[in-house]
Length: 639
Image 1 (spheres, helix red, strand yellow):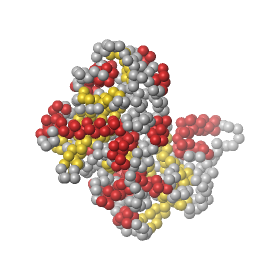
Image 2 (tube, one colour):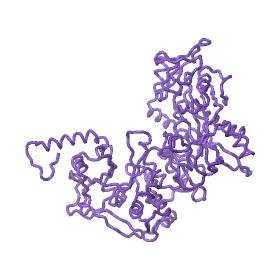
Image 3 (cartoon, rainbow, N blue to C red):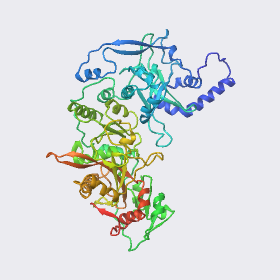
Image 4 (tube, rainbow, N blue to C red):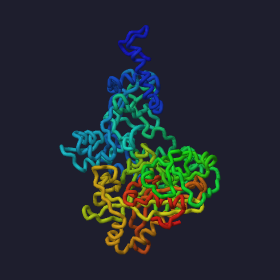
C-alpha cells in the first residue's frame, strides 16, 4: 500500500499493520461494489483514507468555469426544448476543468475524489422536501439555473425543480432490507459534481458509493486517462450503453432529438426471449406425465407454509402434514423451480403453481403475451405498455407522436415485479421516464386518464380498482374459474389529472399504512351503489366484459408451448388475483362504454380479507382446484 505523507519507511510498524488490516476489512466489505463500478484497485487504499477522514480535495485539482453558449438548434424539437428552458436566451453553461499545474495522472493512487450529494430523496418525497427543508429549494433552483426569489417556496418554483431535476439526478438502491428500503434512491451531486458535463469519450468515470460504516453515500470520481492543466473533466451520461440508438434515447434529457421517424410498433418478442427468461429464473420444465387417478373419497394430505391456508382450510377431504415427503398437495408461498425432478420422482404430487406462470405475473411478460390478442398495439383490455429495457426507442417515438397530435401523454412507470405500488410513478415528463430506466427494470404503461369513478359521499368522485380471484385448474383443456366475490380499493382524494405525485389521489393501495384511511365497501353493497351512479350500465354487463378480458388473457397465456406459454402440467393448479380498473372509451358511433383495463396479475395473493368475510374461501378454492367439485362453491366457470 502506498505510504501517506509523514509515514516512516522501513519495517512495518503498528500504524501500518493497522492500516493494512483496515484496508483488508474495507475490501471485504466494499470490494464487490468497487469492482462492479470499475474502480481501479490501486485507488482503493487512498479512497479508504479519504472516506475515513472525509477528505474532499477535488477543489485542489479542479475548477468550475462558466461559459455562455449560444447555439442555434438544428431541428424543431430542439428549438422547442430551448424555448421551454427556465432561463430563455443564451444558456449559461458550466464546465469543470483541471486546474492543478501538474495535471491529473490516471496511475496516481491519489486520483480518486469524493463528491458530496446536495439532495437525496425517494421520488415520492421530493415535493415535500422542497417545500419543507430549509434552503433546499433555493440551493436546487440555483444549481439547476432556475430563477427563484423570496423566502416561501412557491408552487411554480417547486414544479420547475421537480421537472428539471431529471437532468441532474443520479440513482442507486440498497441491496438489503425490506421492499420499501430497496426502492431506488435518487440524488443530486453537489455544485461541483453537477457541473461535470457529458462526453461520448469521457475523461473521467463516476459511480455512486455507499460507505457502510458511516451509512453515507458519495459519488466517486476518477480519471480514465492522464489530463493536463486546462483539460475538461467529463463523464458519460449514458455510461455502459453501446447501442447508438439507445444512447440517443438515454441522452434526450440533455440533447433533445426528434424520434418521430422511428416505428413505435412493438411486436411480440421471439422465442429466444422467453427461453432467456426461463434460464434466468432457473426454472426446470417437467417431463410429460399422465393425470393421476385417486380412489373415491381420497383424503388429501396438504403441506403448506401459508398461515391463511392452515387456519381456514377445514374441508373434510383435506388434512395437514408437516412432512413434505408425505404430502399429496404442496401449497407453498414461495416460487417452485424444479418441476423436472418433481415430475420424475413424485408425479402424483399436486401443487399450487404452473411452470412459466411468470408470463402472467411479471408485468413485462404480461404485456408481451397480451400482444397475441391485440397485435403490436396490444389488446383493448391492457393499457399500451412498453418494456423500457428493450423497447425504449419505440416508446420515445410513441410519446412524441402523441405529443405532436395533442393527445394525453400521462404514463405510469412500474417495476417489473414489485407489488403494492412501490417505486411506481405517474408522470407526463419524458425525461423522468427515460431516467427511471436507470434504476430498476421497469415498464411504462399508458396512464388511464379517463377512469370510471365512484362517488364516495365523504370525499367525492375517486378512482377505484377491482380485484378478482381466478382459479386455474388446467391448461389443456383450459379450465378457469372466478371466485364470485370481488374486492374493491378506493383512492382517498377526488380524481383530477394533476398533482401526479399525490398518492392518495392517484393510487388505491391504502392497506399497508396504518395511518391512512382504508375505505372498504363489500361487493354486494358496491353493486347497487354503482348501478345507482351509472344506471345505464348494469353490473352484470360490466362483469361480462371483465370475464371476457380474463378469458382472452388466459387463452393467449396458454396458446403456445413453454417457455412461451404456461406449461401443461397435469399436477399443477393455481390461484391468481387479477387487478383491474374501468375506463371510459368512445366507440366509432359515439357511444361511451366501460372498458376493463387489466393492471396486473398476482401470484399467491394475500387472502386475509377473503378469509375474514368468507370463512369457506379456502374450502371453495381447494374443492374447485383439487377435487373438481364446484356445486356448493362460490365460483363461476368462465372457460
